[in-house]
Image (spheres, rainbow, N blue to C red):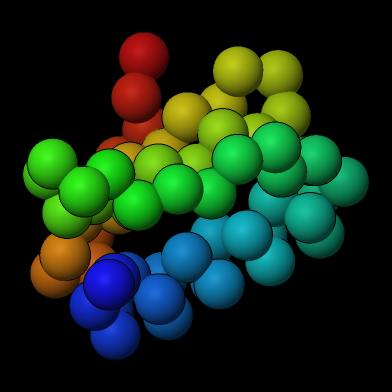
Length: 58
């Protein structure tokens, strides 16, 4: 299960992406690391850590 911080940040980031008309293709919890992964738009990859912090992946 994602943490509450991850859930809030996921909704916030997804809202920002869709406000910019970016399609969201995948939202997935990586059970190995506990991180939430978002794949959107043209190769936008975002990882959200259990504490709610996030980063773009290259």
